[in-house]
Length: 351
Image (tube, rainbow, N blue to C red; front, side, top):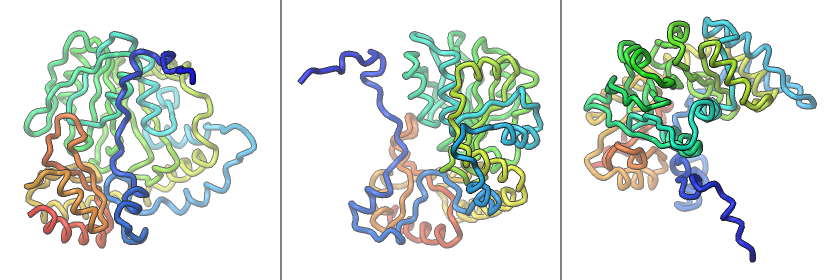
């Protein structure tokens, strides 16, 4: 049989795929758990349902024609407080990240990634044939504002996944002002922090801020990502981005969700209330401004997550995050009942 693998691009042959954590279906099969007994707290999805208006709008998207993002862009502009010329969209935050990376990175270029952080940054850098440079976050997970001169792209995640920590406006400004490269600020969880630095794109021509409707709006399955950027950068982004990557039903639901902010804000309020209740009960929990908690465990994280899974609770073992070590887990904030069950199970799993 002829081998065609030699046609692969050299820089992709050893690429390690992104890791989203355990597959729920595999977990069910492996342990023989009934589907209704598995609590999934591993992927930072919203534990509360999306806007009823968004669910109704799903049925209104015309599927026989290519999608028109006009109304969605209008709703994003009203929500973000920036003109449509400063907004770009993609099928989830991951497409926004990948498209941005393709704009600025080529073979041999360098991108800075403060770790631990979202693992997909490293994947897209390597997909471009570029070289990821890793800098260790400080003990409180803050980012060193000193940036290598040769970094063409700098990834900042705030609130940071998996730690829940935020990067200060002072630090973002310092990095944007001192760097010759492009700064990508990932604000996927900004609604849970109650603040955003997206307005800085009007001040800095090298700053792009990524956002999503997957978290606070509860629409992870519809893949609705967007970014706020200087006009010159948004124009270049649109040149290379797919024209119709977001489906018509997704756009309709996203538009409806953006017009039902009361629902989103109530989801955020409930999530924060539960997050803080959990943190008070967990001595190993770090302060978080996301919809999740980063916990330091007494035992190895792979053992703790395995024991929790035996009890029907799926959380994220953070040993797969570069720089996180082997005694940390990340747990999504669930419903009150789910959180109670997790707290009870963790007391036995990590003793």
